[in-house]
Length: 388
Image (cartoon, rainbow, N blue to C red; front, side, top):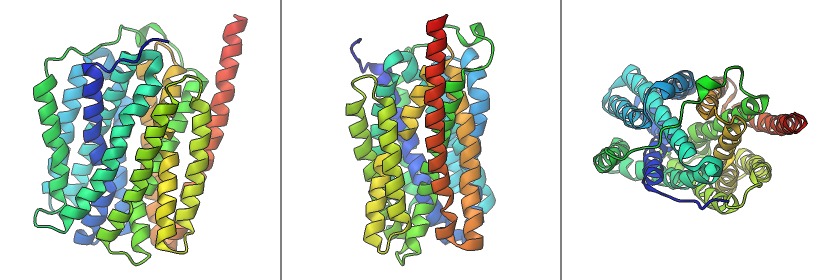
């Protein structure tokens, strides 16, 4: 097994992912704070989540053809600039229309940035991409803790919560100044050399990554609102949600250690799904706030590694066609993350948020089915290759 080296492209990737993670994990709490200002419904909250997630669909459609024609550096810095433009509109706009448009543009730029980072790490580390992706998401989980804390703290001060969202933009500018001349590894032409559909296992694992995104975002977007229904103020609920993100951080640190030895990905996914189910059940049915906070932590432990490990399996199942596999994960993820939170918000307006959260167990069950089907398809492909 080759030595795992964290060179300058890896450091840049990890750092850029911190910026995206701050926005994506701050977006849910920011929507709760924005809802206090604009007094919109749960359905409109679902529209805001769909606006962000539409960027994931756009990325899924455009990334593969762009990656064949555009250098990795152009994708990285171009998507960063687009994300900052969307951020400016989101935090400086007034009213639902302007902030909604800002969320959509931030979603496109941010998700394109995420996908470019995943591609860069895959190019750099090859068969060790699972370790690189999990390690990168340790920093993302740290931002998941920091973002709600920063938003909650600044919301109570003179600067306001919007000031927190400017921090990643400043960090991206500093990264550009430091690394703008760094040569990034571009993949050799490959997707055009392998016509035909992607392997079934790749699609199933891409679906697993997508369902994992939906599980994570439904809880991130509406978890604060559920906590508010227990009597907490918005600021207190935002801070209480930090327990979930601490769970993400602890889970990803543990996942980084576990992935140092190959062959553990499927086992880690099963353990992650079990923890997600237990943690969400505790949060959903909690008799007290403290039980809900513990449930959020346990759910964070489980959710932590679902997405990066599923993406790693999807890329591994499509050798030589990683850009296509990467874009399909984002496309399916976007479709689910557009649909699931919007459905949850619409149901919440009709039957209450607690009952609407039945969407979440359905998504966890879908993850289980996709993991089972993906494992079977992978084994079938291996037998076919051995027979040939």
